[in-house]
Length: 248
Image 1 (cartoon, helix red, strand yellow):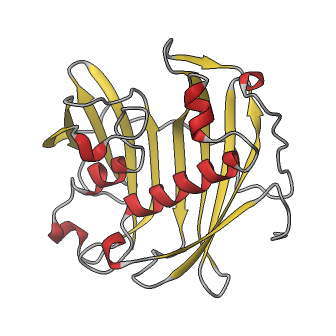
Image 2 (cartoon, helix red, strand yellow):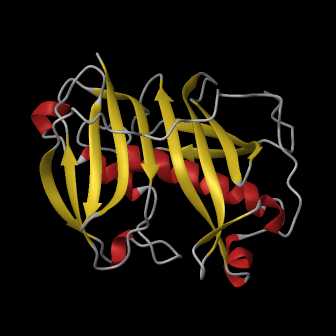
């Protein structure tokens, strides 16, 4: 990929101790946060900052994300993340990512679907509502549009814990930040279950925003080869569905 291509946003990142788990592996939430910041910066580079979007009563909403890991970054690793707008499909925006280590080896790639929404009306807007034109990059593609995460009906889901949205989890839209869902999913496993396992793939679909004070019941399936499914429910509303797949 051409580093000088203006349609591809590139950021550097070092994995600090606060970004890692008890094994010095990067936390999933750190990877999600890094991707989120890169996407925000890429759009801001077009002349539409998050502040300007909020002033216009608009915001980005992540719908589905699918990440494949070749290896998990570790403490003190130097990373480079590249992201680009891949195009639109109806009202939805496609964004791809690639993450590289200091030797320019690709360690992760991701596909994502976003929507531009009217904050007050909670309505998805057409791409033309964005105040600046966006030129999409077609010189690279991680893959097809990601599918929504659906939990098999026959799968047994068991209660893991209850989570209440507090100050520390909120973003500037007043909702639980996208990256925090990585922690919600990873917290469903015990340390015994984590020992000897690393994440090979992570998929998540965000179905409903979670707001301050809201209580979410987190359920999960058992650890299987095809993955551990996780779901967050508040009352009768499904907040998110996700799936963690582990490397052998």
